[in-house]
Length: 110
Length: 119
Image (cartoon, rainbow over all chains, first blue to last red; front, side, top):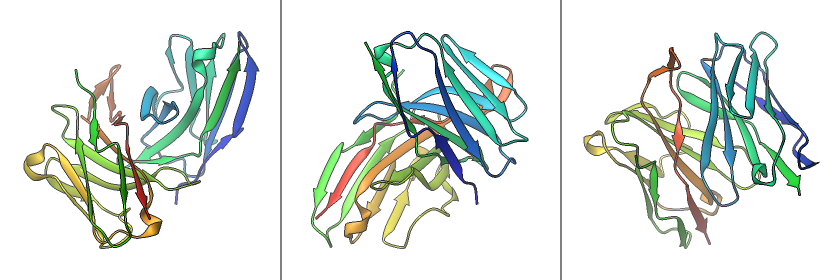
């Protein structure tokens, strides 16, 4: 059974600081890994998807790395802004269904 | 392009009643998924449709839950009869397996969820 862990559970940083969010998973036989953002009371917004054969993906200020052999992924958000405040979820998939971590709640202070 | 939509956004019902949740996937997406998050827990997979066929329903908690996807378009998830532990947020997602940045992909897009409260 796949277990996904996200550390830390919560993070508060001043505006402009870089964010580092961690995700670990127990079964390395994954198809892909997806990072999501969730705002309070809203649905999940897909940020980045990394295929199992890839090492990283980039989109704007976001960069996600994947080390499948060690069961880890890291999401970097450069030059954080108050608008980046949200809960960030990591999910891994095998056979289509996603297994989620509990998320990291980020607060960026102006 | 419209995203995944879900109806209703909130539902409050009494224990023992029936509730039906609806999901409209992104147009053209053959894959449709149901997930749910109960209080304090991670989001958990319920089931997966490919067009109108159930591909995987290993996450359905019990036979009080019935999902359908007639015609391979929208899907409904019925809970009958509802119990207190069914309270939570039910998410629907869709995907069209294809190519993303040159590689095979199954990126899933989520709806806003339906918050179900069973009293």
